[in-house]
Structures are given as structure tokens and as C-alpha cells.
Image 1: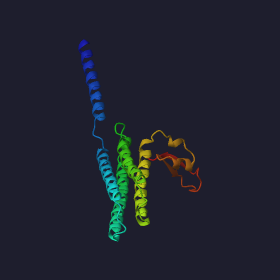
Image 2: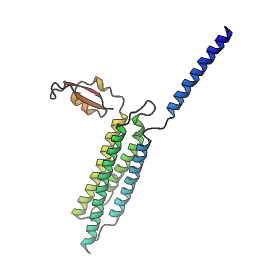
Image 3: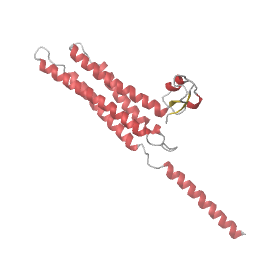
Length: 211
């Protein structure tokens, strides 16, 4: 009897140790979102570079009394910055799409990417704030419009990134408890699913988690 009891204790001990090891390994497994976080870090670096370029271009306004070539060069540089901001906005969207395609786990939820998204948002917002602080009294209408387009593009990046932050960080909403379509659509983490009976009836469907 004593021998059997000892064997039983050993079996149980091995089982418990194995379970603890599995849990520990699961908690330290590599994050599936690490590549996305690195990509967002690269976007942040580019946005910081864009800010420096904007400040450099606008710190030396063209001499309008000498030649139109200087003004044209400034406009061209600002337009190139706008194109880059539009491209970065598309890049962030593609990163978010990739994140959404990866199944999260209890150990690695999608909220892991939120700090990286916040850094991207802040970098884009700093471009907006930097332009606000720049004097525009000596600038022509054409160059002012170009600067405003840069600022608007940077603001779009900041606003869109904030919406992604809301999507990944707002996990406390009980979407199933929402019965009104408009209320469901106001929540970034919720999705209204039509029942197919009447798409114009706000009650002809149900609300559920988008992820």
C-alpha cells in the first residue's frame, strides 16, 4: 500500500509540474504581434523625420521678391511630404488589417499593439502642433494652402490611428447587450450584424464583438 501511495504521489507531482511548465511557457511565448509593433515603430520614425523636414522647409521661407523658383521648390517639397503622409496612413491601415487577421490569445491580446499605435498618433499630432506654432505672415496664399494640406494630412493620420487605438483597447464593452443599430455602430469594438429580414429596421439584427 505504501508503495502504491508513493507512486500515486509521484504521478500527481509530475502532472502538476508539467501543467505549471506549460502555463509558464505559454506566458513567455513570442508575441504574434511583434512584427506589427516593429512596423509601427518604423512608421513613427518616418513621421518624426517628416516633422523635421516640415520645420526645415518652413524655417527658411522663399524670397518671393527675387524669383518664383524658390517658391515653386517649397511647394514641391510640401507636396512630396503630403504624398508621404498619405502613404503612411495607408501603411498603418494595412498593418491594422494584418493585426486583425491574427487570432489573439489570453497571453497576447491585440491590446499589445496599443502603445506602438499611441506613439504613431503622437508623432503625427506633433506635426500638426508644430505647424500651428510656425509663423505664416510672410507666406503667399499658395504656400499657406500647401502647409494647410500637410497639416490636414498629418491630422488624418493622428485621427485614424486613434480610431485603431479605440478598436484594440476598448475590450470592456458588452456588445451583445446593445440592441440599437446606431448605438452598436458608435462602439469601435462592436459590429452590427443584420438578420436579413429588413436591413432598414434597426432591430432586425444583433450587435456583436468585431474581433
